[in-house]
Image 1 (spheres, rainbow, N blue to C red):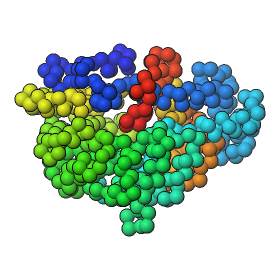
Image 2: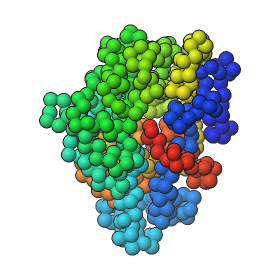
Image 3: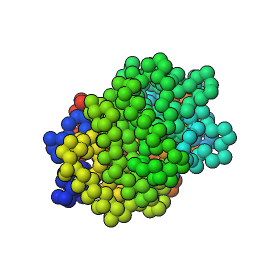
Image 4: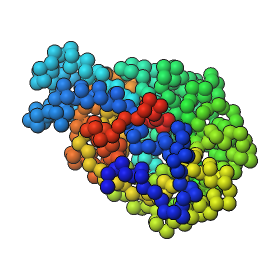
Length: 460
């Protein structure tokens, strides 16, 4: 079965009342936002990078294998410190018959990102199960906090990213607490990029509702409050603190005190909280309808499986088929008795995501193009390709505190090309779906999205 057949999979008939149908797939629906073709949203950037990789002799499908191996070794020598930046660029230029100035410019252009996650701080006020970044925080005293002046360095990238999501590491709203420069100052700095067309999103645990000084919220396209529970006991077990009433109240504040276009909540499901799945949908719906019904169109619910950076560890969080069926049946029954709830579930949630469980599909690909267009700026300032490599020192590609664009381009090219190496392979890649779809796009198996879909609300 092709990966693109995944979007054609229909749930069993008994779940039809919560499954989106064709007339529900409007431009703003979550069904639309999760169209597999969305991953080609950065098609123009990908095309430019493919051409650069080819000219530098680093495109597997277009480069002689011997030359490819030689050029990859040059990148590896640079990354390990065996040769310096100048010698690396000179070698690549010579081996590929390019003027040094041309190779230098290409590498600087390859440093461009289409989408970035920005981690303002590793300080957190919760202790969540399965936290990707908890390992990175162990032994850190104090936790990393991104220097305020470094945020403006995003403007030194070749072009402004199409999207920036302010998210963890830690809890972003804690940034600068007790200092002269705080969260709202950081967000107001990012507003300068929003004025240039960058879409700004915010993911928060909702324990704190931030100050709105400076009007930063006017430049945020969407906010998502990560909750993961419907009951206080589940929340406390899953999140480590009894804060659920405060979090739901702050979710309502985003609806009532801001005009952010999309105000979402998320539920990261596992066998530890899946029994709250259906209740969570109903709770969010009735909470909004009872408190601010006119704001319901701005609300969405995102469900995602809790998966580990290493897929081999996923089993300890995996939901069972019995749990899946029980929750989907429960939600279906609730919708059958409430047509308005049914419409909300179909149009403003991806509730049927549970059907996929916590499985990690293995899809082979030849190059990590995801790391070419997307990256994570950690609170330390270090730039990494994806969250799977948060603790891997060998996967740091740059530093926002002191950007060196050609060096960043060199390291991005290296990370892009190490697929099938022992430390990074399709068998363990959490981004295998994206990499496979993008690869097939470049082989003309996928049509790029229309102009109305060129930028995804949730990033790449």
